[in-house]
Length: 314
Length: 314
Image 1 (cartoon, each protein chain N blue to C red):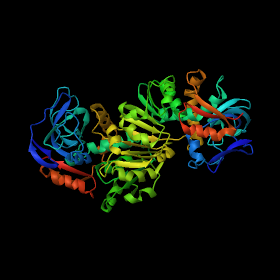
Image 2 (tube, rainbow over the protein chains, first blue to last red):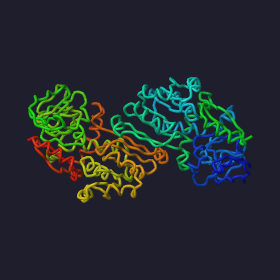
Image 3 (tube, one colour):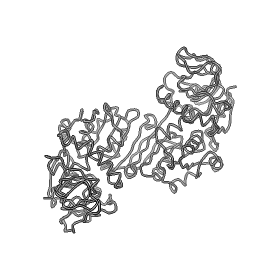
Image 4 (cartoon, rainbow over the protein chains, first blue to last red):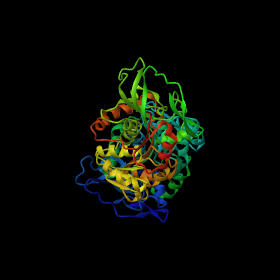
């Protein structure tokens, strides 16, 4: 098979042997694989793969057809359309995925959308609801809201009855967030003036955390799941104490097989039905071929896009 | 009545009119009132009193006899021995307290112990169980474990089946923590080598937070309730993300009447019975008269003590 390979910080297409599915795994003919912030870190050598995952083939989410299954697999059969999360290796023509990390692709959903859904929506759902316990009527600030996780979070929070304020850096992205469910779209420097927020979903990094803390309500929760702009943070603990607030961090990739399956199961139950019904959508900013990975990564890093950058395998 | 009064950073005994109990309040003849870290901050002007509380009389906890009650009071009658938490004003001969913030003093418990119990045990119980959700079998690190909140936390966590590591600065305090339930007592510089800890109760301040984060288990929780050594903290958010960890802060005093009543009710149910049965105790390091407040505060700040410093009113 052909695979995107990280080679001294660059990306190139290379020939690799097909992966072999383990007992509980599906072998997937990949049709689409979304890009994520973690791919950018991995490309720079800053985000090593977990054990059992190809070290130099990036890609944390995919959609495609099942072409073979391990002998303990019970949920999926060859020929089915699936999408799901993997620890790496998705940006290739074939990839294996644990069946507990895979979801059926709803009828009518295109490959690009399906390939950009799993990591993004699993990450956003888990951060908002499992980590931050966002509830109806609460006020949420999403920083860096125009990206894949941000557009997922805005939609999920809106659908759950939260009041959503989306913060975006690029003026051009503003108009796209309102149709997704943002009650208000602001620039990053406007953050402290709004609020107070019960929950802040931090997708930018350390630089915007002090402002987020300053705009937090009593009992507020900051969940950090993106630190693309840097991770070294400084603040006064008295701020947390006075508000009985908390700041937490989370990644999907570092979790073990069972913990990931729990997240995927929650998304199967609470998110996929709304995706199938057209109440949620996966905004795809642009697609690239596998042989255009370098350009796709540059596009991802450049900003100013709304939604996902997706590699299309064939 | 006579009251300890903060006067340009110093403390002196002054004459004040007796407070008048509101509808839901008890007027207390104070017998003992414990000192807390917040008193030190308030004395330096750094911790203003909440509304409705005397601005210049310190004291967040007391024990004494009920001498009058507001006309909506249902739980207590004149003559009863009570202890409880107030927003300030406890370090005086008389003080008012909301009945929902008061607890009956168990038979056989001395006034000094009762006066050093409420703020300390409410703070420790709330931080460990309501904030950090500490469970049996989990490993807890208590920094600054020799003080009032620390000795309460060590006992409460031990009684709940946690594995307790107590960190103390003063060599002389080490021996006292084991009889209270510490499985291990370490010096502050030993922290990073032990662990991992599911929960860290941070009673010292910002300086020990990076080490605590470094010793945290996956899913770990740091709860900051004391920042006597300083509050400005710096760390890398990637640490929180990789561990799916969180850091939160809390104070009891900033909460509203209902939120405080919830904490006191939990302590009434889960802590007071064990105190009454002798399974928990209130270590009192030293007592001082109301007219010795200045010396008592100096003793509190000096460190090297185990348990509470308590002012005895008569």
